[in-house]
Structure formats: structure tokens, C-alpha cells
Image (cartoon, rainbow, N blue to C red; front, side):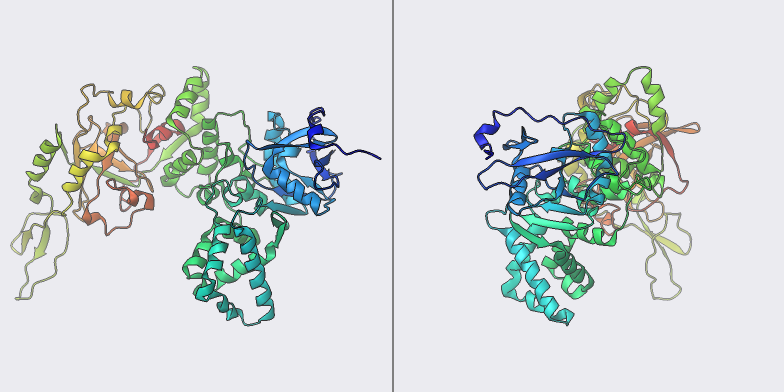
Length: 607
């Protein structure tokens, strides 16, 4: 009779080492779970299979969980350490007598072999797509058993709907006394814990590629078809979908992934980054690598899940991943007006900071820089171009207030009203201010009540003023490479060693006469152009010198009441207390600027 090892005895076993994987024929490792009693250590048999000799298998989709809690198991008779979350799943699968082959990344990928990790990331979509089913492990139930109670509720509704042909009979479940059950379902679909299953990046493609889905929370299993049918039903019924709790459920990533999987819809890398920008991952590169297999512009037929263009490589610098992603995305964008917004989306998804740019530029050799950077050239069309018609310098907030309050604003703002032939007056029409003639008169309108006060408040409190520095004169929107790594304080002192206050600039819309004030870099001059980028709260100053434009520096425009009737291009801009994105497209000459991806990153990052 064979004696099974105890948990204490595992420590005496030699450590398991993965045998070299045959990457040329796209081999993968699969494991089976040996039967065992509750108290016995988990034991697996690991086998390598080529593409054509591969048995049916199930792929495991889970999160790594608490990485500090390590458990030991046996793999091919040798000790193997893994995180507690996967250990708990294996424990539950063994208890159900599972004899299938399984694939799980922590077990089947040699995590210490960089080449193998890169290979599997590229193959990941195919691994999950070829599995007969995907086992979704939500983990052990929470203390309040939210997952179990939500699963019970879904199954109860599914059973009820099968008995009642009237589709709207489900209204019985919207009684006030059942509100808490919908809220429980919402908590399962939209967990607050950023480490929860539905909040992680990698599970997106693992779930979407699944041919069939088995969802477990501890020993509790939910037929996902029941949840899928419920979500589809709620989506089709606007009366039900308009209820606040149902609306939140439908907007959750759990519901969105479920509907996307059922529809089989495809999206570009840009669209995927937009939709799943708030997903979480430990490795920053995974914000891109984790969704590559889903991106229609990165998929190569007839091998689903194979990346094209971007090759996953965990040895690459994080800025290299940004450059590759931007190169991939810009080809599918509808206009170069949205290139800056796409670049910022990637920078934010990868959590790239100023020190990342500094490190990357520092690693560029004098020979590699000229060769590599031209590959990442960009043409940028601003959404808004308008000249600065007046500049004010100021020494203190009091000085600024006196200058703004003492300005004759009547020379900029007015109504032109045509005199009527009868006693009936005509409604005012706003036009550009012109000299009055015999049949017109000028009536000056009052400034918006917060026009000056918002400027004073910004001068007092807005920390962004410290970032309105000058840039060395360069072609178009290019920033010299040696300037990018400088500390923010060094940039602030460039061509401004006396640390003068950022001048106030004034611009006026020629069509509506609406005025805007803002702050700009100290090198700004009257006649320089204020440019703003589509969908972004980024303002720059450029100067036309002969037949070309040169970057002067940064600026910041300030809101006031007369701008609030316009919808901002991006809600993020509207949330800022002081700054204001351009409120409409105004680039009549379609002015375009040349830049590179590193300069663009510098211009988009506040610090």
C-alpha cells in the first residue's frame, strides 16, 4: 500500500522544475488532479502536449490573490509553491472528483523563463479559445456570502421565467422588499475590491474567448447561461433597465463582458483600452499585453489570439510598450485630431510617469536615437487654434486683480442691434463688433460674474500654474530630448531664471465674441497662437516664424459662466475647477503640427 505524503513531508521533496517547452510546435503543458482525501496534499500530474496531440482540456481563469500567502503542492512528485487562491480552486476541483486536463498560467508557464512568458502571452487567446470550457474562479465566498446569495437569486429568477411565459412577469421580483437582493447581485457584478476577479485585466480575454463558462465561488457553481439570459432580458426591456440598480448592473464590467461574449463583437486596441482602462494588473505591460489577443487590429488570421504588430516582451522598457501601442493605434484612428487623446490613454493605462521617460531617454545611445525615433513620427491637428490678442504681466494677486478690474472690457464685448423702423424693438443678434452706422447702435454687455474672480482664484490656488514653463524653440511640437528628463523645477527656470509669474493671456472667439482668459509661459507674445487638443485639457502656445510653427510653452485657460452652456468635448475637462477645454472645433485652416511620440508624452504629462 502506497503512503501518501503529508503537508509537512512536502518540504522534504525536491523542487519541481519545468522541462523545456517545445515552442516551435506551440506546445503547452496540461495537468490532471490526482484523487485524494481532504487532509492530504494536492498532487498533480503535469504533461507537455503539442498542438496536434493535445487532449480536451479546461482553462482556468482566476486572480493570483494574496501573493504573500503561499501553499505547497506536489507536481510530478516534486514540491511546487503557488498562491493560496489557485490552491483553493485545486482543492475544490479535487473534492468534486474532476479528472479533466486543466491549464492554469501559474502552473503551466515557467514564470522564471522570460522567453516562455513572452511566448505564452502571445498564445494566451488561443489557449482559452481552444479549451472546451473555462473555469471561472471567483474565490472563496466573502464573509457575508454575497456571491452565493447572488447566484441563488439568479437561479431563482431563471426558474421563475421558465415557468411563466409572460416576459414581464419578472416584475414580481421588483417589489420593495426584494430590493436588497438586486443590490446583492450588483455587489457581485461590481465588487469594490480592485483585486476581485471582474476587476482584473487578464480575465477580460480569458472570459471572452471561452467556448463555455463554469463559474465557481467556493463549492457553489452557477450556470452562467442563467446570468447571461437575465442580463440580455434586462437590456432588452427599457422599463426594467431604467431602474437605478438594474442600470448599474448593466453598466458593470461583468454584464458588459457577458454581453460582448455573447455578441462576439470585435474591437480595436484603442477601443479596448478605452473600455477597460480601469482594469487592474500588477505588471504594467499587461494593460496592453492582456488584451492584445482581442484587438481586431492586432489579430492575425487564421490563428485566433496571435498578436500582430506588437510582440509581447516583458524585457522591454515600459516606454517601448507605449511607443508600440501608439504606432499600432494611430493607423486605425479616424483622424489625427484624436492622436493626442489616444496617446494620453496609453500613458495613463501603463501608468507612465516622468521618471520613466527620463530613464528611457537616458538609455538611448547617441547612435540609436536617430534611428529609432523617426519611426514614431506623428502629425497632430489641434481642435482649436486662436491668437492671443493681449498679454498682461503681474507681480502679485492684488496687482493682477487691479489690472483686470481696470481694463476697458467694452472694447471687446458688445451687441450690434439694428434700429427698427417702428416702435417694436428687434431681438439682439450677436456678431463681431463693427463700427456703428446710421441704422445701428452698440450696447455693451456685462462681463460674466465669475470672469475675473475665477482668474484671481486660480492665481491664488491652482498648482498647475507651476507647470506653465517655456520650451526651447524647436520645430513644430518637438521637445529636445535633453530637455524632457529635466526636473519640473529646472523646466520652470528655463528662460525664466527670475521665476516671473505666468502672464495672463486674452483670446476672443470671432464668431460669438465670447472672451477667455488664461495663464501662459513667460515667453508668450501678443499674436502667438493658443492651441488645444481634441478631448484633452492640454493647452500650448506656438509661434509662427516665417512659414513654420515653433513650440513656445504651456498655457492654461480658465472657465467662466458664459462657457458653461457649451458641452465640453470630454467630461474629464469639465470636472476641472479652473481649466477649460475648447468648447467647439475651431481650426478653419486645418493647421497641422509635426512631432514625435516622446515629445507628445512630455506635452501631455503635467509633471
